[in-house]
Image (cartoon, rainbow, N blue to C red; front, side, top):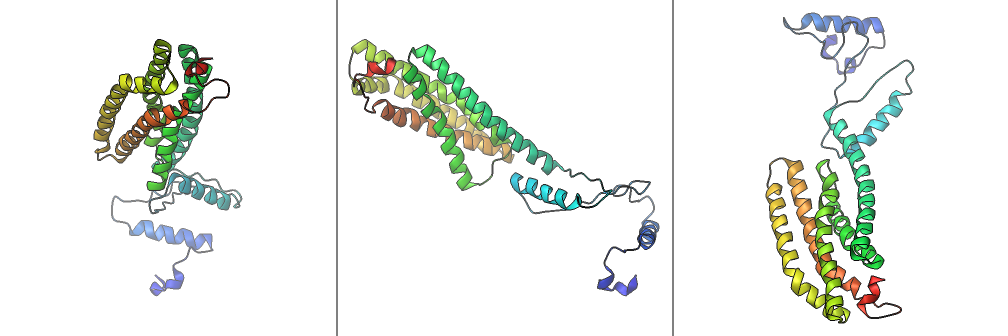
Length: 264
């Protein structure tokens, strides 16, 4: 039509002409085909499909907001944006927000439980550091490496929290028992703790890491990322329990250098 003039590849400004173009197109379709997958029968609504390169959840939601701002300027025009990518983008953002809130609440509850179990406010409070730090560092490393947190990764902090706190509780329990049993200084108590519980903590963490690394070999990218980030978090948690936590326990104290001061 129009001699294939590139200048005519535009939507007509005249509604009647646009309707004639559409009618001509419908009449030109092969038998059995129609345009009802793009336009409804009474011609009051249509579907516009747009293809993009791979976008992150943040970029996709930002694009949706820009589209909404532009289309809201048109009067008497209703629209909605939908796609599996859009659904998962919003779901990921909601899950990440909920994960952060849930992780904070879980850590507070865990700290109170450890305070009660160890009968020490300071030990319970100190347990927060090696339990929270691995997840923060792991997500930081992942952000530098991949720069994207998908739906599967939003639950990693919650998954690893229960695993990590188990090792911390074992370490602090053995530490508290060591200084009470031998009435020794903090260094000797830590040495005894590492001798008694260090091997078990390393072994259990290594076994769990191997299990999640098997999941990391999955062809399904969400499962693979979940397994890999969880394994990284567990490895960092091991470092936190065996290096960071003892270093914290050895920090100078104001009143008394005896480790029993921590139990007050």
